[in-house]
Image (cartoon, rainbow, N blue to C red):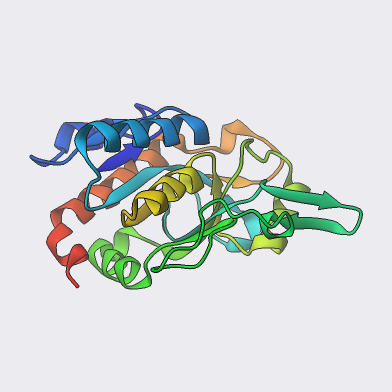
Amino acid sequence: MIVAATALESGLVRRELPAGARLIVGGMGAVNTAHALTRSFASDGAPGLVIQTGIAGAFVAANLPAGSVALATEEVYADVGVMTPDGWLSAEAIGIPLVPASAERPALFNNFPCDSALVERAARACGSLVTRTGRFITLSQVTGVRALGDTLYERFGALCESMEGAAAAHVCALYDVPFLELRGISNLVEDRDRSKWRIKEAAEAAQQATLRLLEHLDEVLAR
């Protein structure tokens, strides 16, 4: 199953979607994404894999150019937690996990790791279409201030930010569905200047990598 937030981020995949694959365009933001996935899982059953595709802003210090593609090793809710006089604390400070522990995994708070072997096989399948693998973060707002972007990078060490990825990873964790995420870099996280953004190019690059994954899906899912 492929999930994207908007038509712009999914049009190429829709035109070239292989037989048997599902595409969901869920809408912008965490709630829309979680709702779309949950509704699909409930009506059609949980798939063998969810691939999130879309665009993202890369942190300046991550050194990812606009137009490149990143593959997530982990998704993180970056604005779920506690702000204290001494700084930000993750949801673990509250002590209530977002996903309770099970026999197969520990409790999950902010961080939703992707299966490392799955990510490795996906990166190999994508080849040069993927520039880097690493941590992604999810926020409810786009960061349009360089100083705040630098703070987020220092806090999380992430490659890029989006508004949906952690929600998709969260739902997949609840249903024990493997999850991958590909993001094309549309812009750097700096003082907002849309004239520098490369949204269409980034969306197309992420979708090209997604289609490559679908071409090699048997290899990617092999254990």
